Amino acid sequence: MARLVVVSNRVGLPKSGARAGGLEVAIRPALKKRGGVWFGWNGRIAEGDPGPAQTLRKDNVEYVTVDLRKDDYEEFYNGFANRVLWPILHYRLDLAEFSRRDLSGYLRVNEYFASGLAQILRDDDIVWVHDYHLMPLARALRERGYKNRIGFFLHIPCPPPEILTSLPNHDRLVSALGAYDVLGFQTETDALNLGRYFSNECRFKRLDDETFLIDGRAVRVSVFPVGVETETFARLARRAVDTAFVRDVLDSLSGRAMIIGVDRLDYSKGIPERMNAFERFLGQFPDWRGKVTYLQITPRSRSSIPEYADIGRVVGETVGHINGAYGEASWTPVRYINKAHSRTALAGLYRAARVGLVTPLRDGMNLVAKEYVAAQNPDDPGVLVLSRFAGAAQECAAALLVNPYDPEGVAIAINKALAMPLAERQERQAHNFRVLRQNDLGRWAERFLAALEVPPEPQLAPVRAAGGGH
Ligand SMILES: O=P(O)(O)OC[C@H]1O[C@H](O[C@H]2O[C@H](CO)[C@@H](O)[C@H](O)[C@H]2O)[C@H](O)[C@@H](O)[C@@H]1O
Ligand SMILES: O=c1ccn([C@@H]2O[C@H](COP(=O)(O)OP(=O)(O)O)[C@@H](O)[C@H]2O)c(=O)[nH]1
Image 1 (cartoon, rainbow, N blue to C red):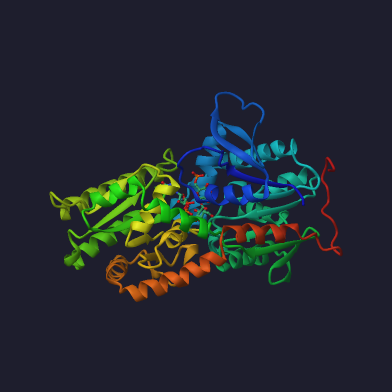
Image 2: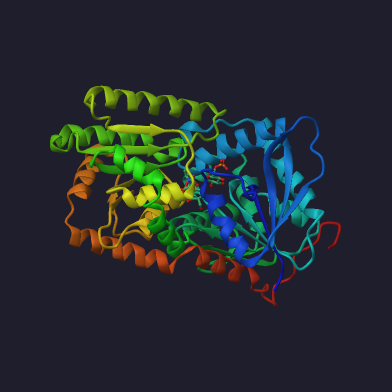
């Protein structure tokens, strides 16, 4: 079996503690199962020029990580990746802040990653690159002469060409994806959107529904929805609900029903819109006042980016407003917490919550939605209220699907979830759980790697080496 080299901006180093972020949560167990190398940024910013890569071995995984320079961090991570690609790929053209300096920082860090990889890559390694930070990485490797099989998985949405083309230099950046061998997406819509871009903008020849001919190579564009470790998470939740931590939380609720939301503090997650919907719910269904508590766990994320600081302010003010308007001396309607929680704590809280409220305005997948389903007690399950704009809505079709831009609709769904009879809750839960058990995290990795390990079509010319010759 070929050695697997996983590459992502963020590397989940062992013992890195409670952290929010689905990419890390997904890659860690998938890589542990097969073994291999995880290459990427260690989260540190070097004072001067970064030194050589650092290597750490744990079990069957080798973590090879690099520091970023301050200007790399500003231009690549805070700049082009998170102020241009993130908003545009989440359909938020209004929030994109483009600068040529950030774009050159983005390309520079991709070259830096390619040079770092060049120190460790072997001819027969297969390389699996993750996410929007590293779109041009395969091209940078091909230019150094690497002919390895290289796959790319986009964890976030891929919008239609009508939106993608608003990305300055899109022709250079999106077409660079053609240097990969397999391009994986969360949903059918995402894969179709990239396919339309390849056909209309790049004029790449389509070989079949899933394959394009690019520079003499067959490039597969397909759907691989990321999952959770459904059975393992269900077991964890069974244990976690009886821990002192969860019991303390439940005691503090004095018998009130709990609604839970868990999201990084990100404008894509629709947190203010969700809170407005909760306020509507309290206004429209007054019988629930004093009988339900909404717990929102929201670790801060990308805090030095202005749009993230803004959303933090808005959420804080909205919580204050709702608690001021509806709270009693003995009841706080919304509990808002910025601290990251461990997976065990979250598993127990999900299981104890009557409603899981997951209403992003746009989300590649949303693992919290899947974890909420995995954590439920089948004898007395809670109800998932889920945005139709989360990738998870494709598989969790038995959730109460809502439009997060419609606060009244979400308020009605919250009431419906809280009042839902046991038989209907069980039926919806069983349906979602069945789908998620079948399409779990292990299957995601297996399917992607199987596609990546298929050798190139013999009748197609091999990729031309531009130098080096590996
Ligand atoms: O690394 P950060 O900048 O701190 O951000 C955390 C991660 O956020 C995004 O996660 C996505 O991946 C999930 C798993 O596939 C998916 O469920 C979710 O919808 C995505 O938003 C981002 O894509 C990662 O690169 C970040 O590491
Ligand atoms: O305090 C927290 C908040 C979130 N998470 C985890 O972070 C991931 C978030 O993934 P998701 O796909 O929902 O969103 P992302 O943050 O990747 O956009 C999930 O596995 C959560 O359980 C966590 O471990 N601790």
